Image (cartoon, rainbow, N blue to C red; front, side, top):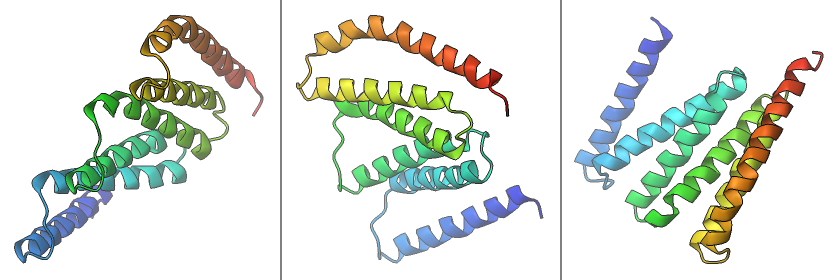
Length: 166
């Protein structure tokens, strides 16, 4: 049996168990919770595979899927409330965290750490702006200045990393 078919089999067993638990009334689940729980599960698997096979993109995308899936499940369950104005800043922060996790999974790709810092900084600035701590005007005015600097620094780090001896 191929690996893909094993995953399909496990997914069907888990889905059947979830539907059975819901049907018995043990847990109140919505269709959205099941879907976003599946997204989070796929993210967890991709994250694990990203650490076991670095350089495949699994660490970044696993972090993204896991973070978004968990946030949606917790929001649907009423545990957290995510304001729509914070969706973009939180997504940028999650992308920064995913990039940082990708760097941790594959430290030889150290140029990725610069991108992680840039995304985390942008996400933090956008979040502070949404909370009224940093004026939105100042954050938006700084983007045309820092975006080219960040891109040049990232490209330089990428070139330096490619030339470094193994």
